[in-house]
Length: 331
Image (cartoon, rainbow, N blue to C red):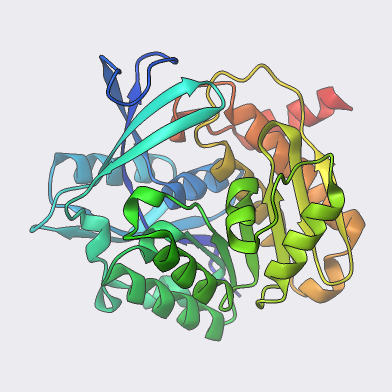
């Protein structure tokens, strides 16, 4: 019997949000610090959906690092997998939002503590006691965190966990695009579930102009990713919705129309909604039929839509009751 539904691994950091939407990077006059980091966002969002979650990662032995651990503790995320590095600072991310649906990111890590996660830092008990392990490509951008992430994925998989990977490509963190694609594709071979947005899917497959108006393009891109090893590929298309693909079937699932205030964190909320459902499935090959997957992505779309109605990432994640009420109103 597994203790945790979802364990996430990777970056836990401070997002420096702009005080208003409109200015580009370099033009923002005031920033507001908020807790963030994609894997941490997913852990919190899944916890608010009443899943049992834990986080593995490294922060600086500084005020920000202590604050971030307290945030996760308050959100009922198990934090014994957090390590504190006395040599480096907690990573900051400077954010600008030209509009409510797009964001510009500058990572302030030279290096950041999250880059220093090592194999020895991994909490093997957490990795062996989870139904699902989730992480993104930010932790693949540098050593030793890259090797630690591959080691965690293999250890958790051998212990019986399903492995979930969000491409979450941040160009500024990599030496060049070729290095990023090489490491991301190497990880795709190791996982059960890959989630990518339309830009990332185009970059990985060469398919262009991926949107809901061209389902054949979505299918070609998703099937190319499937050929690399995973059992399930999910493509997110922002305000349009999402698309799933297995070896048996694929389909587009439309989003819920809402008046978006801030789309930052919506992808992480979507992942949490998806994992909250998938973590309860024991035999994927039998259970991942079109009806189940359409229902799962509808739920995940709802979690993402609700997150877009508030500023910030972690502060905006909805509760289980809020998601269920939202879905009942849609019906």
